[in-house]
Image (cartoon, rainbow, N blue to C red; front, side, top):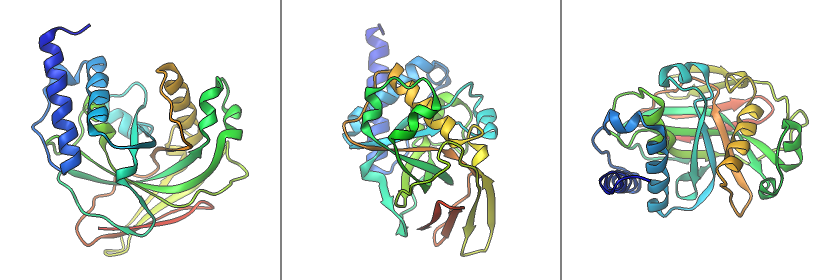
Length: 260
């Protein structure tokens, strides 16, 4: 149990994070003595997600890329909700918000809600519950007034860095448990190309999904509808400016376009 004073801190910070998320605002940098306490960080994140009063439609998994894990000093991935209010279809124009880091090209799964009725012990048990896979883009950034991420606790507390989720229609893939593909983001405005690979996501995106489903069961978290899971970046974080148009491509999954 937290002390009365500590509970006030939790309530205050979670309220300010929720307000910043709703209004596209930034707040001052959260102190390190809070950020270093992962249990406290998880509690604040949960409170903030509840106070946001948005509709969860799935989960994003973060810190699945070795380079990002090293930057954040992360021992394992983390997760947070994807919300309907900031989920967009392919070829959408989005507004830039303060403190954006950029975009990430990801593999996303559409998952049957019945997965929560089964104890998943092996990755092959996931197959009947995967309704499809798709190419997705995640727009990432801070609510805190920061220039770059510095540790895992700061990423967790800030809604997992998620700002928006952009998706295409899911497809049935034969090699769904061993999906292996090059990935690419092209900035159509300046012609810059950013290369990646699905192996950058814990060696295989299915490993990210498997980790999440086990973690959700451990924490007794579920959703009542079929849901999305975006598994982590296959590419470096690509910077975004006003007027940019990005085309993401994952071989055999398809293309996705987003404008700013």
